[in-house]
Image (tube, rainbow, N blue to C red; front, side, top):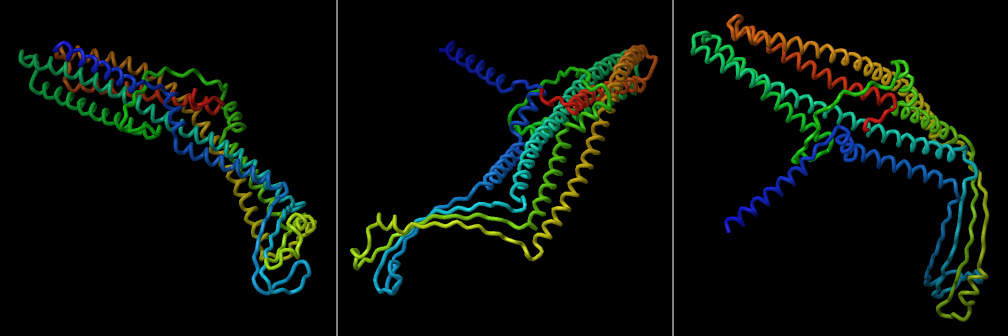
Length: 444
């Protein structure tokens, strides 16, 4: 019985371990960005807005075709009325019904309908670009939040490494104090250093927890579920852009934000053309076909049967109408004025977006170059600071320098490691951004 219970417990434990490992699947940067885009509320709303614009375009195209309606009516008359067969007044109870089909079509309306179709088509194209922008923005936010987690993960490791080294030094100094080679002041100095590193480790662990919360928020990932990411990220390959000018030229011609601003300008221009069309006369075509049936409840035999009346009462019409705008309460004039202002505003916004993208591209290129150099220099600084610290540690053990000098060397090494880490991760981010401006997808 004991062996059976032990077997069951071991089996349950192994099952729990398997489930935990399955739930704690390590996600890469691209997988996190893909998850964020697929589960983003902003992207979902933008996709719905795009679907609305597709529906608006389809509706505008359909409005160019004739509008056809059918009608069926029935009525029971009591008391005095008109006999439809003789047009004489009667005082009987009758029943009548009618059947008809009618249609209308706009032949010319100052190209308002055509420009509406064109404007909704441009709006649909702009919606597709805006959906792409929404996906890119979510991916960028995820990239930044992901790198924060990577940074604080490595910062925690660095802080823990220095804390452990400080504790070993503290143990050594305490033994040397017992032997009389170190003073109580030296011990207190190292204890203070150890407390500072312990505080730093606690701070970095808290920053790491907050970074994970932010990453889950950006990804729309449940806060209560475990999220494990790949923190070992290799340096990115050099961007394909040959120069900053080549990068600028490509971005100005292909960047989604600039494309969206151009679509907005074109849509405003078409809306202005549509507003001008309201000054033009409009020509409409109407047509219809109908028939009716009538019966006297008091004398049904006096009227033809339903089939005969349905055939004999048939009639139709064709009508052409011309509507000439003379005065409409300044509605057309006000609409045109608002459309002109919207068009000018869109032109100014397009210029502003182009300048903003130019600045972003140039800044990303320059920061990539700068962080790349900082990373190379950071490696040299870490190597030099490590040599200085190792030498200071040996000198301290031999009583040649004070604990304060050792702490200064340790802090310099810690700062050098932190600077190198930050430059490395920023270089990876800026490299991805330069590739993005050069047409490469953010999610690979």
